[in-house]
Amino acid sequence: MNTYDVVVIGSGPGGYVAAIRCAQLGLKTAIIEKYATKGGTCLNVGCIPSKALLDSSHHYEDAIKHFEEHGIEIAGEVKMNLEKMMARKNTVVEQTTKGIDFLMDKNKIDTYQGIGSFKDKNHIIIKGEEEVTIEAKNTIIATGSKPASLPFIEIDKERIITSTEALKMKEVPKHLLVIGGGVIGLELGQVYKRLGAEVTVIEYMDRIIPTMDKAQSKELMKVLKKQKTKFALSHQVTAVENKGDEVVVKAKDKKGNEVEFKGDYCLVSVGRKPFTAGLNAEAAGVKLNDRGQVEVNENLQTNVSNIYAIGDVVKGAMLAHKAEEEGTFVAEVIAGQKPHINYNLIPGVVYTWPEVASVGKTEEQLKEENVNYASGQFPMRALGRSRASGDIDGFVKILTDKETDEVLGVHMVGARAADLIAEAVTAMEFRASAEDISRMSHAHPTYAEAVKEAALAATGDRALHV
Image 1 (spheres, rainbow, N blue to C red):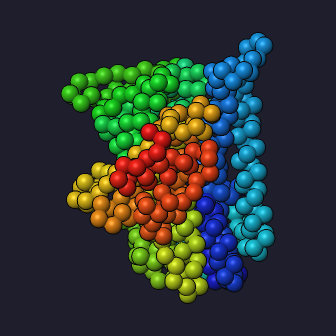
Image 2 (image 1 turned 60 degrees about the vertical axis):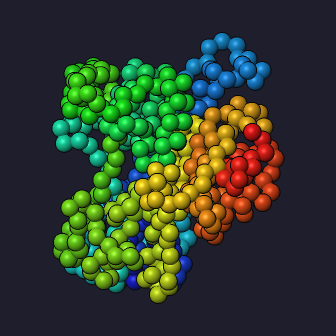
Image 3 (image 1 turned 180 degrees about the vertical axis):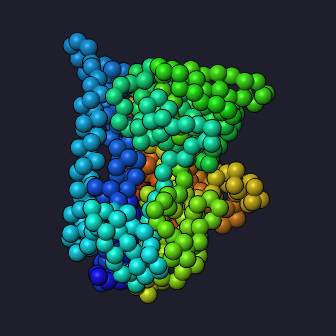
């Protein structure tokens, strides 16, 4: 029987990063993955394939709508080949997952394919082509999540689909109904809107991306409406039925009236739920809470001292980069180090175009917590770089402590916001003030200048270019 210092169950961003960090720290490490390819949801049916389709569909939209204004004229009709688009996406996924195989080999991590189940707290049975049992001094549970649904919805994977099926469509829907106005629904909705589908987003709350700053919700909705996406907010879905070539969604509006939506496909994107099926956690004595999450303490340690859990299977935001931070954190805890994670500084991103990115407290949270704060906002359209590229939608908003000027939250909508948010995370990790950011030179012309200008606006309304 093979014995390891650490065994990681699950090879998503949290799991494989945990395994690499354990190996770097001199721990004999193994990783278990039930699928043929590593990388978990993110690399196979999540972050990576969705970004590939967002980029491809963006190129198509530019070709049919924006090339002409740049003086690029294409003779004849621009055609979209969905099969080729999907093939490119598959190639991107394959290259990325093979990269994980390379990293496992490079770091001398033993890999097992099969379902990892606890026999007891120190032994794991791997059910693959053969059944193998290995011994683990420490185990990290990194089994991730899967798409959630509503109790009355039957996901048939043909007309009523999740994000997994939406990433491998054989045709562009005529009318895509999207249940849920969060990150996944909006990103995939925009992909198919660009490719020619009519898209209607049905959201229970009174705004889209409801966990982000209200100003971001308002701005993104304004832009998406301009792109002809339809919205039904404050609608409670009560029934979803596949009628062959048509899907009928019934919902109650905010006045309690029943309304009906009809489309040829319905994407159910109401979040994700922890995945622990087959883990046999009870055999190891590991406690799950009533939401199916593995219960952990501040060191991400379960109630069984040598078993840890990270990522989507524990509390907190279901984000790949949060899982990666937790994977590194646990590896270092096991090795006897004292790492830290500031969960307030885990950024959130929506990869629509314009992109939406956020870190720290929203304005609504600061009001709720009775914090005396200042706010500075700068519009993207006032930047020379934005006008040059034609990406003039959006803004950067910086929220600060009114007494100390410390940055408490940064919220942005605009081109490359997903990349720009790293500046805000860095500033906040070092507890910078808005004054600090405003005094730093930002290259011209860049989208990043909006961060400096918002910092100037937050400190005595000193923005220079508005």
